Structures are given as structure tokens and as C-alpha cells.
Image (tube, rainbow, N blue to C red; front, side, top):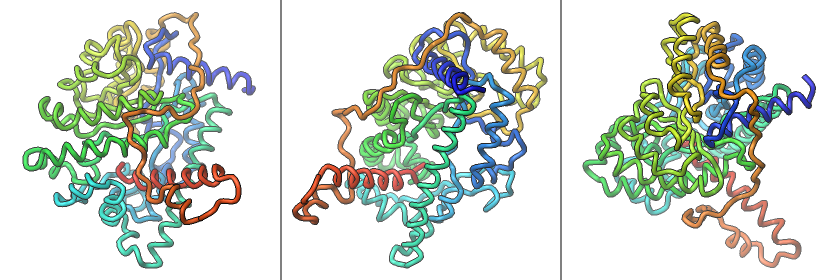
Length: 457
């Protein structure tokens, strides 16, 4: 395929995706996967190879794109095995290391933060991360004075750069060779999920809602700025694709619990990122039916909501239709156990109901399962091409690039370990261009901040 044709294909796919998120007219329902695990194993790779062999991972996705060129975006991956190994991360069990090569990675939830640590977190989140949290979840940090710990941090920093190069190379190959955009760039968690997933764990956080509710809400409030800075630092600088946030614990909360503990800090986080010029892709894990009406409080056409297979996508359409784009609908059971005809009929019904009026992207829940039958995936695509067409004469164009950082008044400045003013005072008189030195110093501080806060995921 010529570079011109590839470029045109990239723009057509990206334009369709962006237009759907923005509730604009599109030619057909986009097929835009949020977490397409099926693509990773389609060519025969093990799950270990996806996490440890970047070339194998890329080859698998290239094979998938070639066989299913009708998809509009292809997910990215946030787990890189060598980085987790270098620092001894305890919060994940990885395939081929702790698990058989064909088993999906697993998150290890525990009470890494104790109840008496709330005040430390609230007073200074960055210091809490360095002095209290990271030593508990990063095995190589257990004895920070040991030479092994120093070497481990050097290795982990280098692994972070290696991961960045892997992701950049993947993006360039998929775009320039196959005309394939990403579905998202950047990541964060809702403040409540930071606590309930990574720090306190689910059981302790649920207990905190009754025993220390003020501490819990205060911690959520202070985490807003931290997760916003993490999201903005890892987002696409041109704002082409949305920032990704998986929501994990909201499905376990009653409406009153959600309204008090989860929603205020999550809403504020989303509003800050939108005001900064970004869109967001939020995966609503589980059944959000009791909370969907709250999403109407957010700006219109700025967030794509992935509806889980356990959720009710028809109800989501009834509530959010005309306000926010939704994705999902294809049931895992149909893809794994059904026949191509059953999948075709299922997708036809989705196009007829949820797809009416636009603002809909076809996907499964969180992902297309590893054990999806290829013939069923093909039947799904063919059904969209047959029943999901709105107006074939349309060809939405991508939005104009919007580089640069937009200041948000409600976002507090990033907490730095060593601010430039401190470093400048240590240097004394600067005999050349101070701006050249300051810019690089602060960039490195930001990169360190990202490295520290990525471990909440």
C-alpha cells in the first residue's frame, strides 16, 4: 500500500472515530476496540510473548490488522514485563513468570496502605508514595540503602525508556504501514479506585466508608491533582485520541455511596482533563445502571463510555443518547460459543437499537475475549458493514491538531521533589541561558513523577 493510501486510510479511520465520540455524523458505526486481547493471540502468540517480546506483539497485531482491515482503531498495551521485573513489582502476577505462559496477568490486591497512613497521604501524596507506599509494593525498594536497590532503580528507569520506545515504534509502524490509529493514549484511575485497588484494597476501603469516611473523602480529593497530572503527562500531546480510565469499584457501591465517595472526585478529575482540551475513554466496569444518570453532569460529546458486558447497553443508550458516545454491546458468550449466524443476528439488533441516531461504537465489553472464534469476529464485522451504515457518502475528517498544554485554574501545580528554584539556588550564578537548563530539569522531574505514580495502576 502506498504511503498516500495509507495516510488516507489513517485519516478516514481516525475521523470516523473522533466524529462518533463527538456525536457528529459518520458514514457507518465504527469498530473501535478498547482492549482487544483477541488481537494479541490471533497469530498464535502466548500471553507471555505479548508482555516480554515487543516484536512478537507487534507482529501479532500486524497479522490481525491485515486479516481484519475494517476495524478503525487498535488498542495499546500498558504492561511491560521487564519493567515489572526490574523493580520487583508485587501487585501483578505475570504469564511465564508467576503463571503459565497462556494465562492472563493477574492483579494482586492487598492492604498495602494502613489506616494510620491516611494523614501522610493527605498531607503530602508524593512523599507518601516514596516513603510509605512504594517500599511495600516494589520488592527491590525494601532496603533503599542497599546497592541492589540503587541498581534496580537505574534498571527500572531504563526499562521505562525501553517501554516508551516500544510503544513509539508500535505506533509508527501501525500508522505508517497499516494506517491504523490507537484508541487512546494516557491513563489514570478514579481517585476512589486508587485507594480501593492499589492502596487500601477493596475490603479496607469499604470498611473506611463507615469507620473513617472523612479521611476517605479527603484522600480522594487530594488524589485528584495527582491523577490529573499523571493523565496529562502520558496523554497524546496533539489530543488526537482520548485518555483512558478503567473504573473498577463503582459497580459495588450503592447510589448513595457512589454519590458521596466516588463521584465528586471522579467528576472533578474528568472536568479538569476536558478543560485541558482532552477527550476521555472511560470503561464502566460491571453494571453502572444505577449511576448512569450522573454522567449527564459532564460536558456533552467529550467522553466515550465503554459499557461492560454485565451492563445494560440499551439502558445506557436511553440515558446517554445524544449526550455521550457509548461503546460495547457484543456479548462475550456469542463470540466464544455462538455461531456466525447468531453473531450476525445479534449485531444486526445492536445496529437497529443502540446504533440508531449515531453516538455508538461497536465493541465487546472491556475486550474481545482471547478465545473469540475468528469466524465469529468476521461475522461481527460483516454485520456492521451490512446493517451499520448511516450514509456512505460521508467521510469525517480528523480534528485539527491541538498541541500544547492548556492551563486549568482548578488544577494545582505538580508537587516536585526538587523544584527548579531549589536547584537554581544550588547552582548559583547561571552564566548562560537559564531557560535551556530549567526546561530540561523540569522535564526530568515530570518523567520521574510519572514513574512514581504509574504504580497506582
